[in-house]
Image 1 (cartoon, helix red, strand yellow):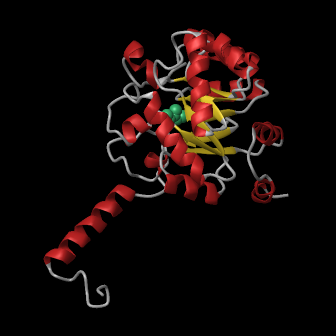
Image 2 (cartoon, rainbow, N blue to C red; image 1 turned 135 degrees about the vertical axis):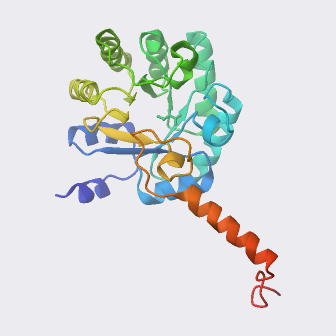
Length: 274
Ligand code: KIV
């Protein structure tokens, strides 16, 4: 059976389905959305997971980092995305400082996101320091997607968005953290900007799926920020982003043509009037 046929057979993505996909070696496709129409197009196209990422801080709000976006803003966008999605798994990112203070506060905030948005799961960044939080959340019925490697919420600690896990000690830490998160109950882990060899090793050893972003082809799935793969963010050109469109260029061209049509009295025509 072809991979296309196999993935067509899998509808209404659940955590169980994702695990089965890994077992059957069907690669998982994940992209971000923050608004109704994008989420609808992704779902119609057959995406497996839609992430309402805290990258909304960068691509929607124009901030330099993911730190400023608030939990209320995340809830607002996840609610909108949820309305559009019928089949994909909807995952909401937990924002900076909404889960780091302690287990109790994390439970309250994650519970709020699940309850108010109707999302299927939440995602949080970090290794050992969130393991107990993950364990408690999963115990009470909140599915957690982990996130290791480059952690954008820790940009001020690391000072750069460079590849993580090149140095042996850091690679070992990421590897150990992946095992810890699986043991704590994560149903999947995002691996961001690490060497492909490390992505492959972790993916081979874990039962749960890994979703790579700049972590090589050995991961069980891939994620990109939709605005990046559509070519909407011209300044951001990392190696791991494959651009499927040049939407920034095309949008600017359309806007220029519209302005010219108005200046030259070419729009609206009689046919476009009442
Ligand atoms: O916020 C986000 O979009 C993410 C992805 C890059 C994985 O965390």
